[in-house]
Image (cartoon, rainbow, N blue to C red):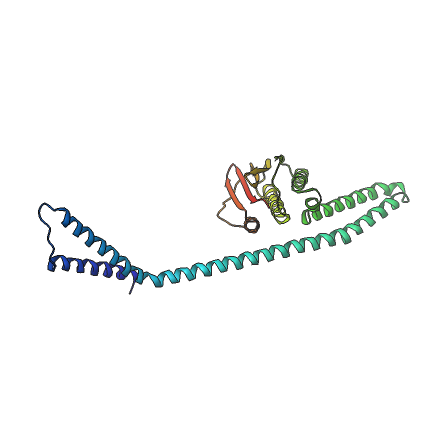
Length: 285
């Protein structure tokens, strides 16, 4: 039987029994009720309510059990999903470090050797080839600079060496050098300490937000701020580019949300045709 009809039948049974007691029992109410009659009615109402609640409780017990089991299962699934996301992000960071190390140790060193060889060769070639060789050397130098920039993006060593504010400053400077948008930085002093994991989350969210501002929003100006809100640290990246539909959860936005959840933080993304604002708050360690 459906729950709706169970409730209807229980209430109907209680009211029917109460009606029979009033009809068949030695109870009566005068035109002008006295205190004793009011007490009888009050006691009768109380008995009805208690009886109804006891009957409904017995009917709702199976439902409460199912709801409790569902809540426990949902919590387990959330814990497993969070643990799975943590493992995936940890594996992603490890892969970033591996690729960065290989780029630095293999490709970077090889390009450095080529650059030194071209510089020595430039002194021996005929004058008519010197300009072409110099252009080739500059192109190799640009390639080496690109490799170093990719390595910095993959493995933010400045975050470990100089701390979060300096790492964000380096990230903003790198963004301004390779983008037409201007960047304004605001970092308030006296920020509460963060764990290394939380600092990495803040850095990666800022990195993703700046990348989206340059690649998709085509922003002219970006403001990056790191401030204190109580015992929490708030990162805000706001651009004046074209917005997007925040209901479409792309890989970048989904990754930011997962990282924020791992740091027990709160991520809010608002977007309109006038620009996009990414706000992340993480608790101090």
